[in-house]
Image 1 (tube, rainbow, N blue to C red):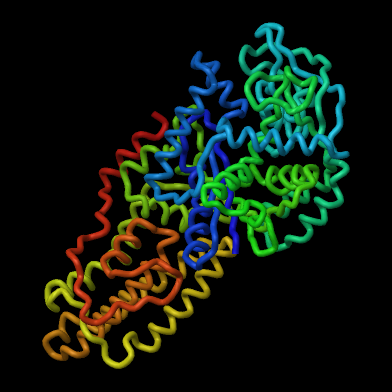
Image 2 (cartoon, rainbow, N blue to C red):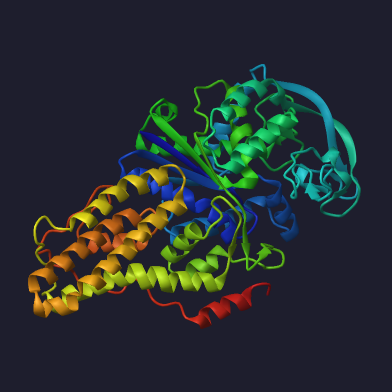
Length: 542
């Protein structure tokens, strides 16, 4: 099966924080699982460089927008590498292959009946002397009264146009903008209401937030949206008479999933069209604020383009993450920056915590003390302990070779649990239920430690060597399977363990032969001391 997994694209205007990371991690877990079961996976994402936030940052720093997005793109790439993300293609919207794809896609779309020309208001700041992109206009939301930018309210999520804002102001200088009339290309979303409703109604299995927010947009009534903007930072409009405009980023960046997928397919010599065929499945992974871009905007573009596209099958939309009970604020430095945490802590600890305690289906709060307790108690104290006590026992007392089992190997109860885990954990990952999948795997870790304690091999090595050997052999087999089951979540330590045991990472039951000689092993994890957590707490808000 062909599997496309599209992780949300980050505005390349500032550092990554763990709120971003908590929404992106599910994509890598799902990608690793599908590769393990033998699927042909295209896991793609990139940096959104043409968004107005990039232009704002560039203006603040007095540098070209390209310099801003190049800087942060490299930071993102390094962060994802440190955290063992397995992207098949991670690009940026300034890449030539993305620009070419978007222009070709839009050019075909403009020939359809769903795209038309119309005069529309354009915000212009006389003080700054230029036209304002939507997000350069700020004011109050006409729906809820919260602070809003010209494209979307940050409070209620309402999608709007700048002229709908209450008391609009220029983001740069604070002056009240004038609204001039200019000609734009529009996407007739109102004409696509029927097929979009049918599509969304056909996916009752989506997470509650995806279903509810998508239906809210449909129920409130879709509005035709401008595809073009009077800005100088973006992709050229492939239509005569629009040389002074660019493609609106909303209708460009979301096509990055397709452009990166096409580029990855070309690198493999694969047929791009087959990825959108019947024998395929598509996941789109993001935070809940991005839901309408994936359930309404992207399908609408595909419909207007008329190509043989596949709509998103699975919408993996996370809720929000707070830090120590407060909303993340990058301006106030109330954030945990990914570049920092990735340097100071084990990547598997970060990945484990943000899946086990993350905002999968409800808002979650990141607490440093809980981060420490989870690592020391579950990762080090349970998983690491089972591996270390078993393999160290072999090295110390059994000549560094895996002992013989009695009978078929693992006790029937353990073997049954392992066999069932491959099916149930796999199904949960495929369904986007990652927290439950990880919990199930760690229940098996706890079972293994209980088995070890009850069998007392430190005693039976003297009183009943055969039983001792059988106990240790069973624990080795369990560890081998745990390393495979946990690799989508904790790839760094799992790869180490599988390497020690001479095993592959295919999603199937593992067996380590009796007599297998272990290489030199070492503890996988170190304790996180309270002092380290105190240091992290002291950094918040500074």
